[in-house]
Image (cartoon, rainbow, N blue to C red; front, top):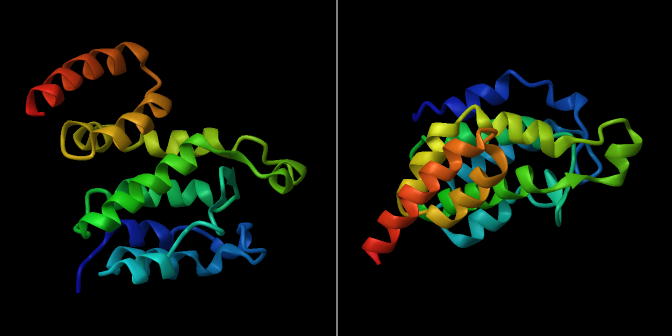
Length: 167
């Protein structure tokens, strides 16, 4: 059995108290996330989608904040390439979205800010992603997440030059 810090992190969350985009509580999110991490083909990835739960289009729900933290942890875990790309795409949705109108009415207008803070905890994981094969997706995340613009500009200049040399 593989020990996954992202799923241990999930155990720390009171999911039943969080709103989900599907209209239920977030109680099912840890199982969905675990299924995503273990997905072996496009059908399994589609069945374990976070879309419709964590976000709908670019509109975020309360469960997005702990999910963003879990995604950053999962980026350091062993997953298939397609699952890894899906995680980065989901993280882009979390840090770049905005609160759904129902969340705003519930008094949670800045879910994306909280997602950015959660993602920032894995800033070096995100920079490693940028320096490797998923540069475009990681760069989009870092552009929003890194609260030190000088650092981002420095790394961006260094990494873009190295990436262009590889091409």
